[in-house]
Length: 527
Image 1 (tube, rainbow, N blue to C red):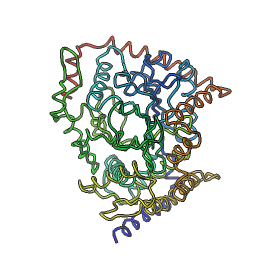
Image 2 (tube, helix red, strand yellow):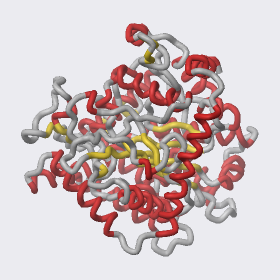
Image 3 (cartoon, rainbow, N blue to C red):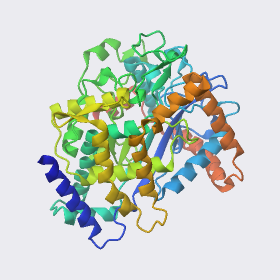
Image 4 (cartoon, helix red, strand yellow):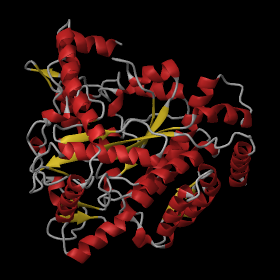
């Protein structure tokens, strides 16, 4: 009975948008991508060289920066209205980067290249300013808490904001009496809750990390079976990256952050960044004059909390993410569950991004009740099950306390997206959103079409290990970008100019520091 009620509410909202008279009210969402990738030698070893100076200063270059490691490059697009514009920008920025990498490669998969040990993963450096040193200390803290190897995993993040025109129309459909900012934030939190409920679907459809090199475990025990001499794998796995092998790390099992409202979300994060945690206290904060971590709390800062999807707002200089959310509400969401695609030179493709946009529309329009602790535990278990066993025949998930076939549930969700895709396709003769949806339906009909199955099939057909396949694809991608002709000279010149300006901006920040690091960190913690 409950599902019928939920479906009726969803259908009423969708019909309300269609009948609103606002043509294309679901269109006009802004989308951006952050793509992470390890820089490696031609032999697949993580490079030990500094971030190339020609790419700019990671502290101040907002489009080419580093993540955890000096070797872990992060490419960030601005938001675009059209998917093709986004991918063109991502292609151009890859081409620019490759012009300055010499013989280095960008690793083509999420799970890392050949790793000797933790020490072989150099921490990202951001200069001698207080904010730059704080960023490196934070990363050192991540390393001592979780191990550096886990931090060398790469991903693709999809940033999405719905069209501003949508909120007034949806507010009218929902008969909301909230101020617009509060209504908008509440709707984004509806998206977060429903993504927690249904995001396992993204792992099945797009997970591309069913295997990993044995070096990832660096002498630690693993229960994963061997595929070959150098490869461990999960036979029916989709995304080891998003499993307890990767980011779903037991160290963060103590962190529970509600997405039932903006207030609860900020409350729980604030509690985690201010509550001491005995295992981290044992590590020490400042030992023999050197910082090991920013503090000994459950989280050093808010960004340490790993989740599949985050509410976001562009923060002012020095402003905490949660303070920005409290000040002006949710501006967009960041979907963090995408593996890097070995089969796409930029790590992602148009069909995937279009499907995600429509999926977020589904998460918005479906009923989204608050999530209690028991339900959250069941949702986490569903994600883990699909990450580890998503292609297993007859797999069932926990749906409202009952065992339910995953494929049947997935078909139900895709069928519900049909009307959303039709709205997003308004004015598009080629119906690209419907085509993206059909492509995903084919993965339910034939599991071998999933990228995780495709990766394992490729390895079996070629006789390559996971490492060898990743290395070969990395070289192919490099050849692709360096062979693009004619290059977009205007945009490449913009990247070069931005890189130079970023160095100058970092110098200004370093020259403007008025207090020592201890005082700076104390002031940050007190804010």
